[in-house]
Image 1 (cartoon, rainbow, N blue to C red):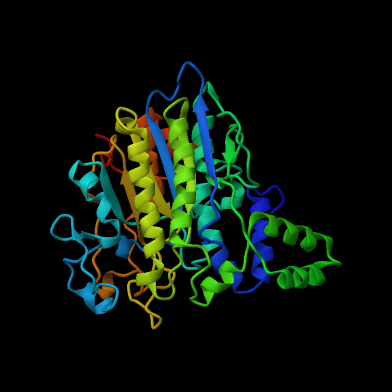
Image 2 (cartoon, one colour):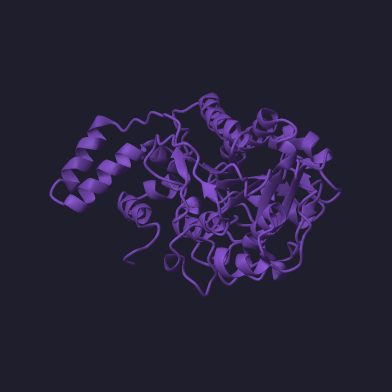
Length: 411
């Protein structure tokens, strides 16, 4: 894989896999967050519309986000997880009660969802591979390592006259969705991570004589791969309060929103912590609150008229199993859901073709069947916001994609 566009990240991932159980949670760690922005020059080739992309790392459970309460099979698959009633949206689907603060946006038509969506990724259900394919924007016939840019960066390459936002480079790693030839800037909020000294000594001893792994370990410690990940795998609460996470998220959103209110037109960042194998009812509470906070704070910080010209897309690498497991959680699945918000959205609806929950309708008898490609929703968003030609979207930005019919995302 010489020349892989995401090679630095993948090298770290291989090192993490060598650390055992930490790897799964490292892909979904709640504090590994970077914001990336892109702006335009005085000619404003992107116009006044803003696009915000939030990657939900760890495989967010779309069936918990937007619950098909109108299907009687849901309660039999999820006797524990469906016990708490959701907030009715349309008589069939209900919103997670953890997102109750978003109901006003739903009533205004500034919140919507696409259900039963996925990337073309199937069967292996690896966080790392799933996230690579999501951010590379590739199809099954074109592996992610054949593409040297993230799909959002390729979109920027298709628009002449763009420039990068003024640099706030406080971090080691860009969001891969925006990596590529088009210049962008990265900013990471200052955070502290603590790895016990004995663990650091152990890692140093193990990798001391191997320069490749020693360098990778040093970088991982710098990036913040802490023992919180191991605690998460054991079902323990990492020693980071929800309030601290919300404060850090506020800083990130405020930074992005302040620049979106000026020259910036594209922002991308991630929200992790969605890997809910155990005690999902408790484990998903924090990420849900943060997702709600992102949307509400972005709307408040931007305010009209900027929010009225903004579309936020929140997407994940894959969904989770329809059935809850023996640990009161869910495992890696296939079909999931997208959250969309913004004044530019024609929301107030759950979009997409619903496949049903009958056993014969499930993917491999275990997962929600995908009925649309997450890339198509992003492509139609970019076509509506920026007028990018469908041929460019299907051939260059999302190679091999068939966009299908226009879902009418924009107000």
